[in-house]
Length: 202
Image (cartoon, rainbow, N blue to C red; front, side):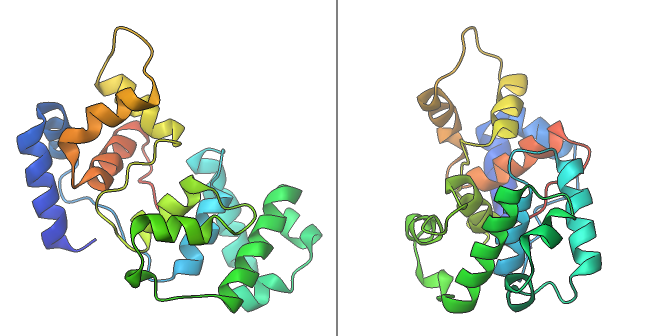
């Protein structure tokens, strides 16, 4: 993400919320790294669905070492069995091929799309849900105000740093994050960072 935008965001968050200010201060000089390749981001997010950061990194390393270049044209031609050998489930291997075909056939100018338009377009791909599309928004398009409420790590981090007397509902998380607007992506990144020793990247 652009450094000036990031600095504006961290200044806003520090001013709006003392807890967020402490989280930001704990990781000086760190921040969200933009991925230039949207296909990479989308595929990486699908690989990371519902597994640990460590497990996703291991699968991804095997894929990068074996598929050179890691391009949609090459991945689309691969067999499901070959993709499974990297550690992907059969279902995820199919999703990966769906993404490759989509990228080959349809790759619009995403910057012309609103956040919700991007999500609507990507979730038409079988295997891509809202969470995956939100990772695309954050890590490829670097949209500043994404709040991925389907992300269990984010919810866990919020509960850890913002304790509540009763279990929260979705609307409770949304209300808590209102003070973070329009930089909820940056707040999300710091909450992830505080939860995991490996910075999240997609």
